[in-house]
Length: 553
Image (cartoon, rainbow, N blue to C red; front, side):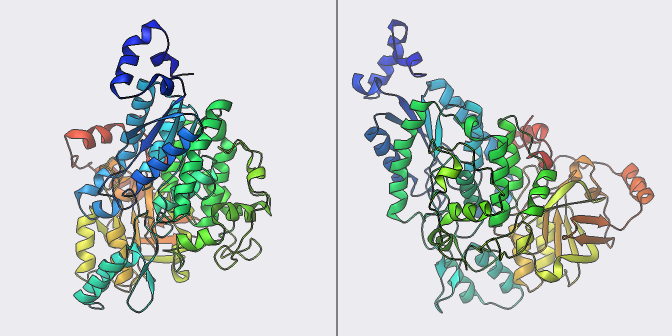
C-alpha cells in the first residue's frame, strides 16, 4: 500500500506516533488509508450538507475495510460572489483547489481518495487533482437544490431571481415582487436547481466515469443521496483493491463521451473551460474545434433551466445522466468500452437503463435540435473561438447584426443597462474581463439577466472575453479569444461598429476591414493591470487563454 510509507517499519515510527496522536489504533493503521476530501462550508448552499455526505462516505469506507481520514477543500459560492470584485476570485480557486488537494494527498500518502465537491469550481478543481495525483479516486457530490415555488404555484430558480432585478429596473416588478423571488428561488441545500455550472460538472463527472449513477441528479435533500455516499465509500475500496486509477478512466474516449453528454444535456458554457483543463492534467488536448465537431453530430435532448422550465429533480426522476447516455447509444454516439469507477465498462453500467420520461429527456429520434446545446463561434472578432449556449438562445437571435455598444468593464455595462441606455438591436461588448485582463474572468450573470429581465433577451446580444454563469440565457457569447488584454480583436472594436452573429454557421464578425483593424491595432496600448498584488496578480501572469481552458503555466 502507498500508505506503508508512513506507517510500516522502524523508519516510520515517528509518523505512526502522530497517527496515534490523532486517536487512530493499530488496527485502523493496518487498513488502507482513504483521504476524504470534503468541501463542506457555511457560505455555499451547495456545501452546507456536505458534512452529512462525508459521514456517510466514511461509514461506507469503514464497512468495506478502510480507514477514512477527512480533510477540507475550499469552495466559493458564485452567486454570492456575483456582481462585485469577489467574482474575480471564483475561477482562480479551481487551481487553488487542485494544487492544495495534490499537496495534501501526496504529503500524507493516501491509498485512495473520495472527493466530495458540489459547486462550480470545486468539481473541476478536484477532478484536476485526481488526474494529477492518479491514485484510486471516486467522486460523490452533494446533489442539486430543489426548484423553488412562488405563491401562485409557479416553479422558480436562481436565474429567475437575477432576472427579477432587471424587471425591477424596467419598472415591471416592485420591491415586494423582488422579495418574493428572494424568499422562494433557493428553497433548500444543494447546487442551484437548473443546468448551471455546478450541476453540469457533477453530471459530466458521472458521464466521464468518475462517479456512480445518480451523482449528478439525486437532490441534496433526498436520503438516496446518503445511500449513494455510502456506496461511494464502499466502492473506493474496490478501486484500491483493483488499482483502478483516474487516468485509467479519464481517457481521450471518456472525454469525448463527456463532451457528447454535455451537448445532449445543454450544459453550462463553463464546461468549455473545465473539460480542457481536466484533460490537460491527463495529458490530453481537448480543443474547441473538437467540441464543435461533437456538437454538430449530437442532438440536444434536454432543456433544463435556464433553457427551459424543467429542473434537476425532473431529470433525476426521468432516469438521470445514465438515461441520457442510453439515448445517445442508440446512434452509437458514445464509446461504451471505457472503464468507470464501478469497475465495469459503460456498456455494462447502461444495461437495463430506461428513459422514464420522454418529455424531460427527448428520445434521440425527437430532439430539441439536431445539434448540441453549446456552439463555438469563430471569425475576425474571435480567431481562436468563443462560446455560446445555443440551447438557451431565442430563435430570433440565432442570426443577428447590430451596432456595438462598447464597455471596458462589467460595472460600466451594467450601469448602462440599468439606466436604459441599451436598446433593441444593440450588441453589448464587455472587454478586459478575460483571464488575464480581469484578472480572473468574471461571470456576467448580472448584465445578461438584466437584459432578459428588461425584456431585451430576444433583441440584444452580449459579447465578452469574460464568461457566463450556467444560469445565463439569451445571445450571450463569452470566452472571446484572444482576449482584449492580449490585444485580441475585441480590444479594437469601436462604438457603433456593426457586429454580425451567425450561430447556426458558427461565425462571429465585426464588419470592419482588415486594414482598419490593423491600423487600430498599431495604435492600441494595453491598459495597466487592474490588480498588481496578491494571488490575482500572480494568476494573471501565469494563466493561459480561455481557448486552452485557462490553465496555469
